[in-house]
Amino acid sequence: MKLAITGKGGVGKTTLSSLLARFFASQGRTVLAIDADPDANLAAALGYAPEEFSKITPVSEMSELIEERTGAKPGTTGGYFKINPRVDDIPDRFSARRNGVKLLVMGGVKKGGGGCICPESVLLRSLVNHLILYEKDVVIMDMEAGIEPLGRATA
Ligand SMILES: Nc1ncnc2c1ncn2[C@@H]1O[C@H](COP(=O)(O)OP(=O)(O)O)[C@@H](O)[C@H]1O
Ligand SMILES: [Mg+2]
Image (cartoon, rainbow, N blue to C red; front, side, top):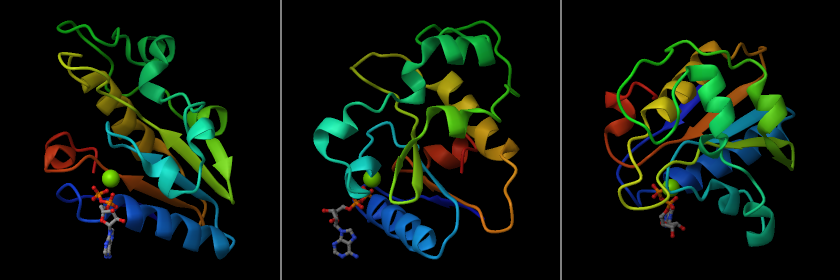
């Protein structure tokens, strides 16, 4: 199962995502939770303390990884980038783990005028498209508020 939780800001996406992640983990399923909201707080909802939370490096800050995989330097505009980057090793190499839930934080906008998050979105879309799951595996994505996840086809 791959579930994307979308909707307006404040409607309960993060709360529902964390509850589903914990529920499926408690059923013995392998769960990958992806915080795909640039204003990330799924880790807090999953019970990470602030000091642990701050140690998680968002995928969007792995500039070398994004550049290596997509061919685009984050924060730059124009040019070409790959729309089918390699992603199979990302969940195991870059996720945090707690209570049976693997957590990947995509990250995104850090400051005003920080540029577009196109390469990051491409990486996310590709990651979720190409992840091959076993029967009992679940991916839960806590999405950005609004309809952007539909426009970008990340949902
Ligand atoms: N079913 C609910 N009933 C009441 N309050 C809720 C419910 N779901 C979430 N909340 C509260 O609403 C606020 C926003 O929830 P959150 O999950 O962060 O929304 P989103 O991720 O969609 O922005 C939080 O304070 C959360 O505790
Ligand atoms: Mg949220």
